[in-house]
Length: 367
Image 1 (cartoon, rainbow, N blue to C red):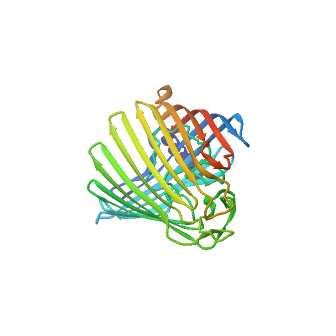
Image 2: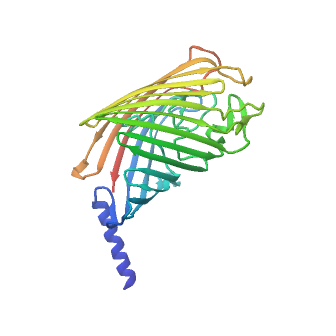
Image 3: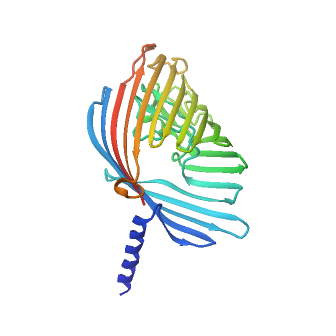
């Protein structure tokens, strides 16, 4: 009898979650709230890569995300919050998106620790499908590949530890994020400019952000840098953990219109990377353009294979079909991208990948 009762409660919770707009509050009182939610996302993709290891073909990707969130409030206006997101991939892999704990004061300061992401300093709008020839700081730095820097190397969900302080001062928002631990995983294959990289000690990355909101307009500025010298070095002893980036992003939003303008710049060993992006979202339709410029030198690392200048142009667009079949929170997206590299000004070396394009049909449901 007791098991049957538990199963009935479970069925009610699942049914309620499928019916609710944004998850279900299991407990919701004046003192706090505990909720369960998530989303389902499945994609049908076609890619055509002009690369030494690429090609063209179809595939399916997707995942189910389950979120557990809790909040607790005190009479002195302090709070405690937590969030855990489990991800079940269609490939059979399991992982975690966010897993953090925070405490602070309403309308004041906040301290967060765990696994999470800081402010997005290079928002790309409705990026239903956006990939690049080469790679970006969303993922890993790849040797002999164009690097579209986006001020995200210290944003979060990486290294071995993370903590952040933030506070709202009227229209002004301040955030100071940190990441610490072994950062050799940033370099794909543990290589940089033709040399193996070696872990010497933990890195400590600092990423302050300042944002100001004025009516429908918002502007944010940030930087990110590693404060530990020689944390990661090459075989010849060059400190490749010496990486400092800067950036600014501006947004204008009014009713169904949203416009983002982004700029990011990175100074690294034997190369500099600059990226400019603009995107517009209006009534479900999104379009964007990203231009990247990389300058390479063979200076500190004599084994470097790239020298000269290169650029990348990436276009992307998508459309959002909302409330499909009259079901709230059930959506379909169609998206496409085209990314092309111009390396005619490279005096030494070449990239493994040049043109890259793709198309996607996405199904998404929030529960």
